[in-house]
Image (cartoon, rainbow, N blue to C red; front, side, top):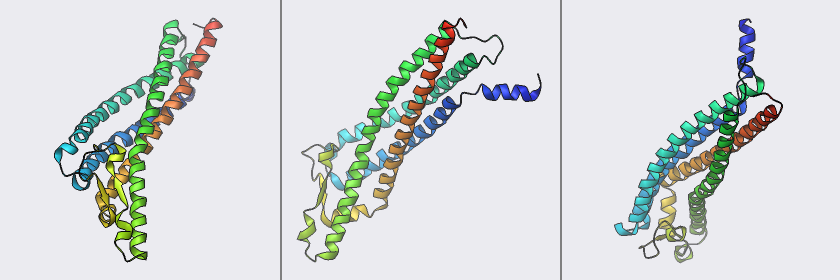
Length: 245
């Protein structure tokens, strides 16, 4: 067997769907964990500076941010290891299906392992779907805040009276960021418009959008994993019924 034939066999044994899913998973988790970590830090600064005066009002939020940042570290480590395992499983099933390595065959243990990965991946996909929806909440909040600031600026340019736009507010308590007894808990009028012009606001907004995109990319990677592992398992079951073990 020449070098060219060996290269063709090796290229044919590469599980391209699993490889693409792994790259998507790593890219998505890098965006989600990295940008999410920084966005949470910036959110704490914004709330402490503009929406709350008493430390006790945002103590719960501060604790949540702190613990959730540790959760992000754990998620990054878990998905890094799980991506390697799924990629290895993809190499195994692809080699077993194509029988590119001599006497290498599908075994009952290998099929059970593939089925386990399928079940775990399906569970992770449904859990991550909830995470993806949860990640949209801060994006929605900051989007509404930007639109409110835009409306305030329009009113400030068209009407000379301050009272026309002083009643337009953003209430952080409505989104669960602060308790209902927090003071002031909301920002109104030109004070709100001035917040939207700060670099901290735009950095936080962009970081949450990147984290939201990262969660979507990770969800797409899990769906690709689901399709690839389900297909490989179905082919292994077919080979098993044909007597190839």
